[in-house]
Amino acid sequence: MSRKQPLYLIFQWHMHQPFYKNPGTGKYELPWTRLHATKDYTDMAWHLERFPEMKGVINFVPSLLRQIVDYSDFDTVEEEYLRITRKNATDLTADEQIFLLQEFFTANEKRIIHRAPRYTELLNKRGDNTDPAALKNVSKQFTDQDFRDLQMWFLLGWTGEALREKDEIASLVKKDRNFSEAEKQQVLDIHEKAISDIIPRYEELRKSGQIEISGTPYAHPILPLLIDSEVARVSMPGVHLPKKRFRHPEEAEKQIRLGKQSLKELAGWDIAGMWPSEGSVSEDTVDFIAREDIRWITTDSNVLARSLSRNTESAYLDSAAMYQPYQFATENGDLTMFFRDQSLSDLIGFRYANLSAEDAVNDFMGYLHRIDESLPDDGYPYVAVVTMDGENAWEHFEQNGKPFFDQLYQSLGQSERIQTTTFSEYLETATVEKKLQWLHPGSWIGADFHIWIGHPEKNAAWDALNKAINLIERKRKAGVEIPEKVEQAILQAEGSDWFWWYGHHNNSDHDEVFDQLFCDTLRMVYEAFDEPVPEYMN
Image (cartoon, rainbow, N blue to C red; front, side):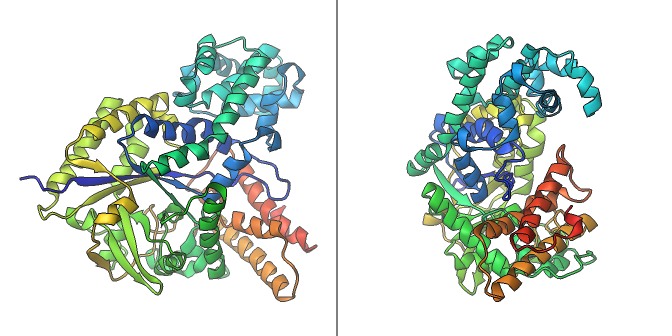
């Protein structure tokens, strides 16, 4: 016999990019916020608009929203990629041509570049050698039209399915080559308008009740480590931590407070819930979040398993324990905690791009029905949570994920047993019965913090950040007024992304740019006070 209650399903799509704006120069060092805006933030709203019966949660990082607001007017943005895109191809310098050949093929080769014959042709013409000396010779084989088409395809490649359905974009995609400067400007204008429409479109979805907006602390920091780096030892007993204990709870409080305030100031959104950056939690973290009148948060199922077992090792969770929220008592009242189904979330994020849309959706729906069948027939409103990246996954999918979303949302809309909802809507009628007595400190990756601390490079970054914060505190105690740009720089340097890229766990095509931006951010603190800049920042 099936239970009377459906299985509730909550999607929480997490929208995040690092803060690419150099606080010293005001220049955006990398273009990914702009390009994800025209591809993914636009598309994710569009998928929901086309399936109004679908409900879900959009999680915006406040510092990302700040960047989206900046990019709503291209004339006010300083970004090298955008400047070179806008420049007439006949006027490009030799260095700019090399820059184009190095950077404008930064896209998924299978799903984006090879989707367009001309883009593929240009990549083949450039070859695999991206050494500047080699590209100097290659550039001589490229005509002005080749460079203009490359400028154009970098734009079109990062154009999502929603914008590709516009007649103007569709005709240019079909044209494929021999673009004009006027046509390039036409695409830029469409992109600029799309970015300026992002906040209003999500606001309409929110007002209609189709989505809930949640957020993170301002610059996406790892809160437990900001509060006290020693917490890492609980889940990583043998970890080598930074030379100096990092302990700045006041910075964590500031990140949480400004995160909530910024979403209100930038978009008018009052949030009831948070996805703490990277799902990273600790008992102190939860207490700090509850101080800001946040009703619920989400983290990972492995954190739940280890919290229930009071152990640092993985523990088995039966379905009833897994698919319901828990209350955690803090000094500032009880906070409701939801736990993402890691397996279900990771299927979408890391596996389904390699399957057909039909096979992927059938697998997903089958998973949900097995959950439903495994739950007790006790009338409780059990809930499965999918929390995952709302932007980076889709470039690995066919057509930026459109066939997948079409079939997924259609299948869910037709399901008699699965009902999508939001966290706050769920809590309006559900009674949270379970309580957590102890909270394991960890994140969505391994239920620990190894991605952000413990490697010599990561630890060196924490030590550098610690010294900069301590310098500010000494100046503050001496009565020196702290410039706003310095406060902003520290917030930015506390973001998780710098520590993510340091060390051997992760790497990107732009590791040196990330390193330079982190060092520039901290260097600005010393320069603001006319203090000697530590040599390692150079």
